Length: 314
Length: 253
Image (cartoon, rainbow over all chains, first blue to last red; front, top):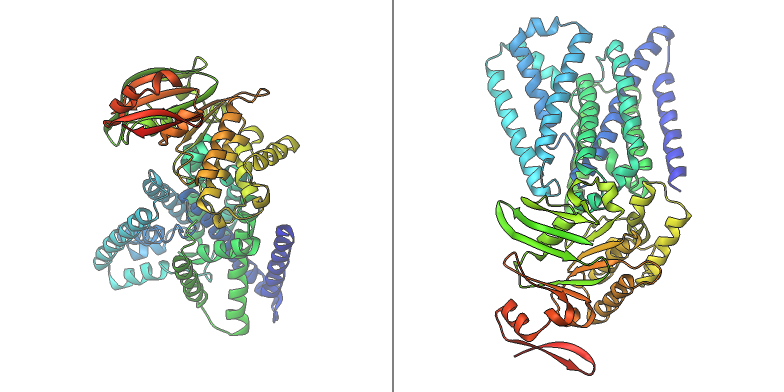
């Protein structure tokens, strides 16, 4: 049953990709196709990375309400962007070569993300209130620091930070994609191979250890994978806080199972499907620009509220 | 055989076990009894490898439990704690199936499925097998957890207050199942269980360990430990053990 649903989802994703590429295609076809393919690849990478990373994060955190964004990763991204612009100046930041800038940003985010998640999940990861409160307080602190630093910026520099702080799928460089795609593919493969251990980790730290799992080692490895996935995705387009929650919640509703061998590809595929079909509808059908991230945040926020109110934390 | 040598344990920087030395027999049912705060659960968590001792060590058949890898330890001992793993959407069969994880590491075979079916039948969970664990009553969940420990098929099983959520009927059935596990002629196991119900300890245990304030008070065969004077001193209140219609019961003195 779950396999059929996965196949159905893959079919819908393929259809969405085809529609995104070919709908209303006019001359010069080669040029437009190339532009669309670059954007499509970014949507697929970001959707898949965010969906899969959220499932992984929820498993090691021991509840189904948490996403890396909710516990402060997005604030961390804005903080790093602000510091980068403050250090280099608006012109210096804009003049950074694309590839080194992307790599430095990814490495900084992955390192800082690993530290953040490690700090939050070190002990008592099952305590939802402690986890969310710590993440929120850290987020507020980082936003406060970013706000303070942004007051020191020139208006033009401030505009650069503002532009970088919101998700945008329009300005993705294809060189970044060539780096991001294999990194993400590798991370997804490693995560998928960890599926049986992740299933066991759902039982909680103590139970998993007494059933033979080296839990702390698994968490460390998974946090590394999450940091890499979210860092690659965020460095590519910017933060999309609730996309992961939306994809993970839909994947669980779709499969009605918790085994990661199915859940990970489902969340990755649904994350990609939401972005591709959403962008297709907004850009091709409705003719809007840059509204998808806002809609995804709105819908994801509603799902978050619904999950909180239904108290299905685990 | 579990050998506990001069074991001292701290939790949240407070000492909970003091210089404890004790040998637990490899077979039969051993009851850990004592008042609240005696350190029974801390001892069980230490034996399960979930708490590292501040001093001393625990050996299982001569091997230091805390030096074992989790996988090797999970093949030697099963542990059921007070905090139950509850994951919504997992069915009873899937939950019990996790008990086989140390054996198959994520790839269950026919022997694993047979062991799960056996555990489900033994604990009366056959009809509930496909129900989500989240839809069960407290007692049914407890039986699911005990069935999972049974399915793990280890020579040693540690259970911390397994009767806490059970009504008298299921409490008796679970104790009888634990006795059957301990004395199974095909695969006898050592069962160590924390019990607050002294009547259950008096009726079913082969050996009894009495603890108070993190120290050992008495240990040995049931009849040597379950005596009026020992129980009264252990709980700081007058208690007497009497036989009523062939069963041992503990009464206020």
